[in-house]
Image (cartoon, rainbow, N blue to C red; front, side, top):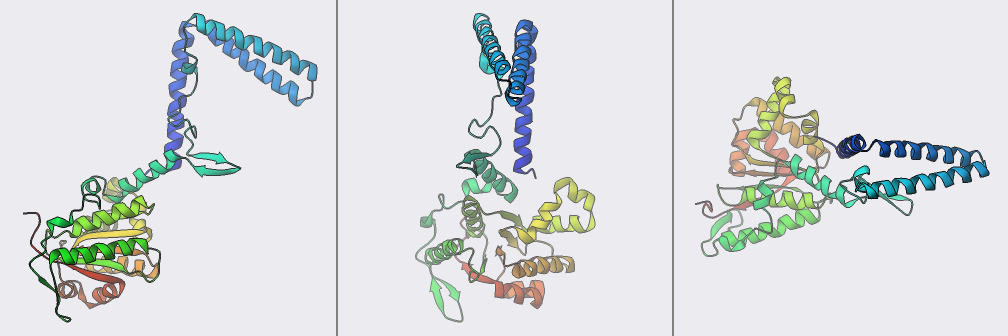
Length: 328
């Protein structure tokens, strides 16, 4: 994935090339103008040299010639209807001149164009570019969740709630998770429940909100994640055609890793080991995760064995999604 420094350098190179093409066309039709520009460049150098060497009289003379040459050029361009802007760089961002930073009171700050670019790159790298356009907190509608039929949430505590009551809880806890993201007391999240109940939607909405807050997020379905890990491990050439090494390394270091639909993948010893390593490493590094699954906690334990389940369950707060499939 391209970094911002490379992108800005490429922008500047493109603008330089565009300027040179415009100059070539204008000079071809107006060779006198090219001679004038060459003369002005030499006079500038001469004036600078005389000023640095302290040759006051020579500096004043070169300055006088420079002013006269520029006026001659201005008149020529006006008479020949040549736009002065065609002989200047046309920056994409005139504020920072395509450098990404602006100087304020002796300090360099991000230009608004760089902030916007970094946001675009976060979305692109997250695998969520299209999804978050539809699935975000702005488009979330609590009214679609039934508020009459109750479902068993916790058999141990005999807690029953309607889908809307449970979703209101999940919404509150999700916002709390985002607001206290940096706290060591904040656990990661496990969403579980049947299909079509809003788990993936909530993952997308949280991802968008975190990216809007400047966090790095990576989203994978379990199948996508396992495919990438298998390619990295067993077919590095294929991996490098679709990914870069940073994609693999960021599984450990990205601010928020989302694994959607865990359990949909074909589970074998490789998958179990790979998942354990990801979960364990992120626990050690105190990095947050959100995992969604159609499996219950008991089914997760049976699918991935006790080692993974016990490590995971200590790491997450679990939230059950209930109700009827909303996609029908």
